[in-house]
Image (cartoon, one colour):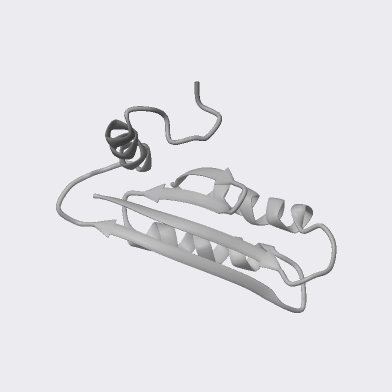
Length: 104
């Protein structure tokens, strides 16, 4: 089984959040997860829900501030093992091209 999640952790502050977001992403390295950060969050993959939840909790706690906003969306497909990249590839097959506006 593969659990795929979208995680977004950010302090509620004025100005750049990059330094604090970097702390959240770095916290994921302590867990048995694969991840990829994009402009809107970080996609996490793990073999079980417990690892995703522990990693998300650590990322949330890694951010300093009086107020931290965390969004976690989980896709827990229990009948087969499917990676995040496969989900994108399915959409690209339907499109007949890469799922990007800058694709050639």
